[in-house]
Length: 438
Image (cartoon, rainbow, N blue to C red; front, side):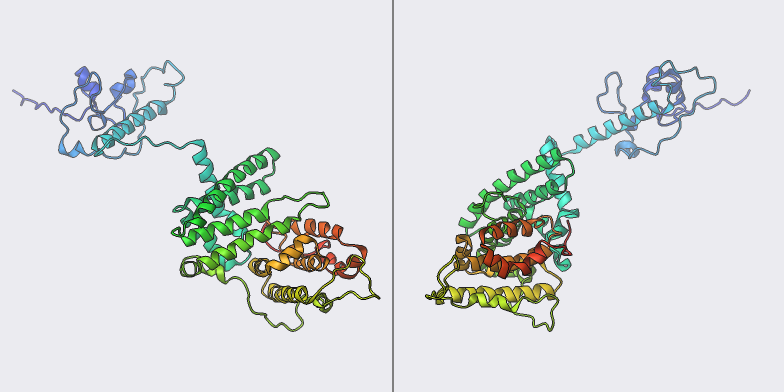
């Protein structure tokens, strides 16, 4: 009598074959029986708890921790398998992907079961995605258009976003500048208009937050300084010029913005100097660099504008500006600061901060003269515009020198234009090689 053949029973077959009480060949992810009959093939290790119609047996210790899905294998289908009845099942990978989806369903259910508390509902709105897109654009593009000093680019790329994540004022300012940058570089007008609206909205929120932060001395000084620099750049980048004779020139509107930065630095000097943005406060040049035969020296005659010109019977007033000792002293101080900034600007590779520094250091009395339209103040400002013109490659400066010069030229009579504006006009309105990222 032949020996009795031992019956081997496996508990590793799929749940569908076990329910049908047929032997399963245990091919994964879909066994031959389920492939042939086009049935759902679910193995115990991946069976979701409480699946209707299936009573899950206790899992062995080896299967209690769900493994990640194994690389997909091609299902072994007998050669005599009949053709699929639909276009979906005609593709062998369709059933494989369906099984994989069920495996991930099981993993999700298992993760939820192991969670100590109900998982919160998390979703990203369209606005969230827009903000993330702007933040990404800042870190890959906008940051290196804010300065042409390569040694400080890492501050804008790394430190500014890091500060913005901890301070909503800085974040509003950062997003406003980035949206404005995208509006300037967008080709389609509809896209540009959309980013202009976004920029204006964030700028409005930044200004409101800035006002609150300034009145609250406990606020983060570093975040306040970072936001104020971005707000100033936003203001510098806005095109607000007009064709009316009495319209305020665009660059004139920069003055209160950059002077606001000076006020903030002065108020919170110690914490800013000790913080991560300390290097930004060192970009200017307070002392004159003596350069023999510099690349573009200021005309020596320009400093004659600081001389007193009292009226006499031989030189009646004809639209000229009468300069007394007080105003002469102010003009002398302004011209001295201009000479320092000018020489260092051309000698150190046209650094943006050195150029803008002159607006910061200009005394308030000179700003008043400028707003009043006094000829000497306007002429001096045109020489400053020569540095602005050199930075015309920066998107937030582009075009401002020409616009402002044309407006100033329209305010002066022929004698002033003939005697003082020919030299700066040749630079500002000429073919000047510019620097900076557009």
